[in-house]
Amino acid sequence: MVSIKDIAKKAGVSISTVSYALNGSSKVTEETSSRILAIAQEMNYIPNAAARTLKKRESKILGVFLTDFKGDVYGDLLDGMKETANSQGYDLIVCSGKQSHRMLPERMIDGAVILDHTFTSEELLEYAARSHKIVVLDRELKHKNINQVLLDNKAGATLATEYLIERGHKKIYIVTGPAGSFDSIQRMKAVKQIQDRVHDIEWIEIEGNFKKSGGEKAADQIIQQYTEPAAVFCLNDEMAIGLCDRIADTSLVIGEHIHLIGFDNIELTRYMQPRLATIDYSKRKWGALAAEQLIKLISGEPVENERIYVSLVKGDSVGKGAHSFTPYV
Figure 1: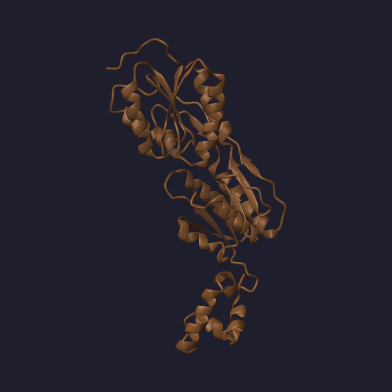
Figure 2: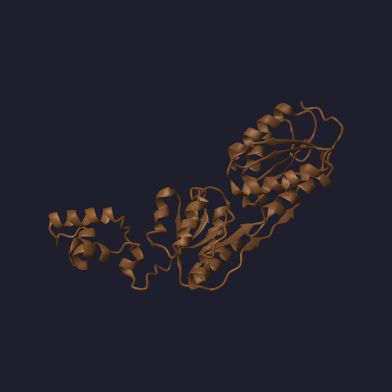
């Protein structure tokens, strides 16, 4: 990495002069400043925020990168991270969007937790190769400077799908997440493994988006195709809520005509009637473990990849399968 010392040597000036120029100080002439800035750009100089303020090149700040801030999962996740980070002398900064990526190469943070698809895996591996410490929650990467703390998506999707089958349902809709979503891909892998071995069930896949609107759109298709009771596995609770809201505008009844299960066990589902069946896991523990693993990486301690386990929450939104025709009025 190019330093201000390198720039000073090439420009034939002192390090302090380069520092003044890079910071827009009036202590150097406009001509000298322009020449130094041109050399810095030519050498692809990246300012090091931490080095400018702390001799140890530590910011004591952890970066958390999210695709967006919507959804009920993030609150508990961030609370778990914050509690663990603060207990060990670190603060958190939460970021979203490609412009924030520069915080890693500029070393404005000591390490990063990634739950953000705007980072490519190649980009993260490049940062890791430069000794940046990273914990990923949304992909599988192998590097000594990268640790994985992943949700057991496959186990959760298996529990949800098998629960519908055990209840006797013979027609099952699967509402997926957005294309490219790690969670959706992993959950669908589990569903497809079950589909490959269970052939007496009608499987119908509907593309969703992990948002309420995706559930509403899926409900429109299910209502249009309705001839008999059917089960629906929404790959997250937010879509399940959207589906419930749309079904409520019809004479169909959740738990009687439409049997529904979600994934995430977000707080809102606990107040739904009928109670939504879903997949539960500790979001707070997920965040706490991610922060803990990142701090260990930064400290040079050995770490192993971790997995967050899941459990089934049975709800009234899933009843027994009915094979007789129930007319839709």
